[in-house]
Length: 26
Image (cartoon, rainbow, N blue to C red; front, top):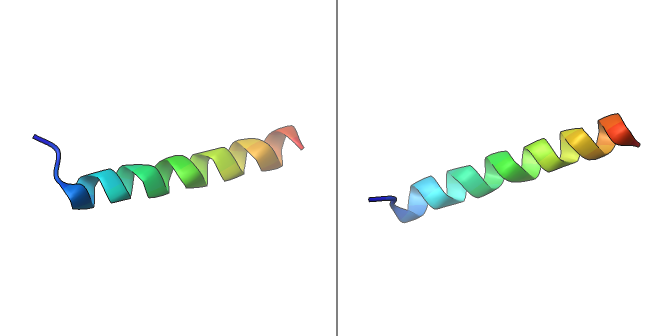
């Protein structure tokens, strides 16, 4: 099962990835 902290970590990682993609594409 996935715990809340894991969800938070995943969301933070996704946020960072999205920022990187935005910077690369921008």
